[in-house]
Amino acid sequence: MLRTIAYSQLDPDTKAYLRAVRQARGRGTPGVFEASSDNRAALALILGAIILPVLVCMGYGTNKAAWAMAMIQTAGVMLGGWLILYAFRRWFASMDSYAGKFVYFDPQNVFVGKGEDLQYARLNEDTQVEPAGDNGVRLTIDGRSFNVPVSSRSVATFVADYYDAIDHLNAEDGWWRDESTGIYGAAAKYMVVNERLPHNASEVSLEVDDVPDEVRPARGRPSGVLRYLLILAFGAFIYTGFLFTNRPIHEAGAYANLNQNSPADLRHYIADPNAVANKDEAATKLKMLYATKREQLIARPISQTDIRDAFLTLFDTLDGPEPPVVSIDVTDRAGNAGNTLRTRLADGIGTEVGPEYILFVEKPSDPGRWAMIELSFGPDLGTGGLTWTVAFRRQATDETPYASFTRLLPNVNSLPSEAVYADLMTKLVGNAPPPPQPPPLDDW
Image 1 (cartoon, helix red, strand yellow):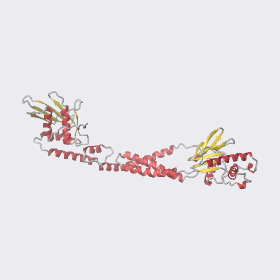
Image 2 (cartoon, rainbow, N blue to C red):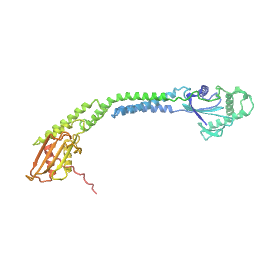
Image 3 (cartoon, rainbow, N blue to C red):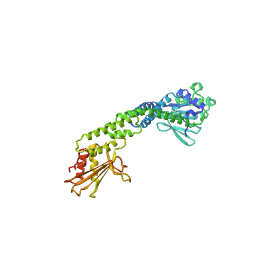
Image 4 (spheres, rainbow, N blue to C red):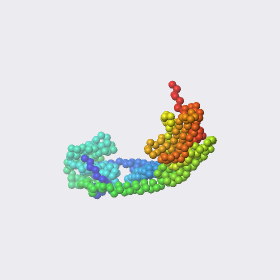
């Protein structure tokens, strides 16, 4: 069977022998040599030249986090750079470190070059050699068979005839009996080509004669730990360099692509841990949006502005980077559930103010926490009308409201919750939008 050894670790005698055979490309050698083209280097160069710039530019061209960009770019440099380096290493590699791709049959050995590795087998007198299909030579040594690939059936037949000629030379007496193994191989090639025995050594063309008696490693395969550590260190260095150059590009791109008229987008940008340079500018822009919205609410015609002004006091606390969450609670003193009116108020205020400026949630259930907008309503026994009370807190932890208002509706001609909704919204933001309409049913 074929054994495998790293070509760089091959013993010097065998390496010198194969170097001479490869340089001569089989001419003047005692065996049958066939080299095959290796396009992997050219393919590696093309792929590397594509992968490296594409991934580096991709990293610079995206506004994702700087560390993610650096990972993409480092992968491009490591992979693309390795492919390019591999191509040049193959093209300029010495014959002492790189086997290339070849097969070589000599009187005592079979060699198969596999790039950086070499496969070989030692032959004996009982070795059987025959063509195997259209692209192989089958060798049987001590009852075990294996195939060696060749380019064509004719080459396989030539190899089989070559070893038949060696057997013939070993069985006959002649001038070659006292000659070297190299002469035997050259004489066998002469027989296959010319279909007769050479008359003497002068008829045999031989330039490479020193057929090695033994193929062995000159040293053990290195562990490669140091090489891998150097690769990791280089990768870490490249990643760090890209990380520091990506940060300002990421921040500039992220801020340039930001919708600066959207409080939600500004908050997302401020919350991004990778955004540093423009955070103060984004925070200032967020406050300006809230100030503009506040002026728009003030400009609305409202006859009584005290409830609106109290709401704006709460609204002024929402212009920071934290989510603009406001808890709201509604109590119907008549014992009916206030969920419907709470939802109407949340939708109505959100519609008039803008859903990105204020978000409503239910009252916290934790002890010691209260609703920031608290509304209660019920019948007024003295007038037969309806009264409602609204209170405002800056935070859910404030037990005492900073403002509270009570209003009387003497004549109510609609549902109490609708009357309270219309009156409070008019005093709060100057308008009471109707509930959203359900989508139309499909026609059948």
